[in-house]
Structures are given as structure tokens and as C-alpha cells.
Length: 125
Image (cartoon, rainbow, N blue to C red; front, top):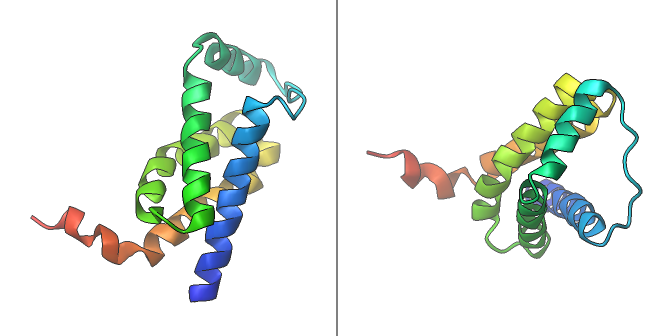
């Protein structure tokens, strides 16, 4: 199980690093808009000027934490809301990419499960 944890952790880290670095350095072409709802949503995100850079910065920090294996407990908590948003955005607006978002969410839950001993103190009164 320890090897599976390392593999999942590194794969999530690499995925997050790839997504954030390609955003900041404009390495990937703009995604084709699949429908009008997604286009309107994406336009709103870009118009906010701070939300995408904030999310991508958190992805970059968490990706580094996952790849290096340091502060993984904190990175799991930081990336969970972003992962849930990615899952819901793909479910409601872009279902063709839902499997990747689902795997990312499940991998995040798996890592939370594996590091659960670190979270126990949060839930004790």
C-alpha cells in the first residue's frame, strides 16, 4: 500500500504541476469551447483576473508538495476544494473530460484516507 500511495501522490503532483506550469507559461493552446454554458463560465473566470491565477498557484504549490512528499497532509486539504470544483465543472459543463476529473478526485480522497492519522486531531473535541 505504501508503494501505491507514492505512485498516486507523484502522479497527482505531476498532473498539477503540468496544469499550473502550462497555464503560467501559456504552453497549451486554449481549450475549444464545448458549449455556451462553459464558454460563459470560462469568460467569467478569466474576467475576474484573480481566480485562475490563484487556483493555479495553489495547484503549483500542492503539486510541488506531492512530488517532493513534504507537507502532503496540508496539500491534500488545500487541493480538495479545487478538485471538487474541477469535478463539478466537468460534470455539469464538459462531461467528455469527466473521467480525468473523477480520477483526480478519487486519488485525492485516497491520499486523505492514507494520511488519515494526521487528520484525526482535527475531528476530536
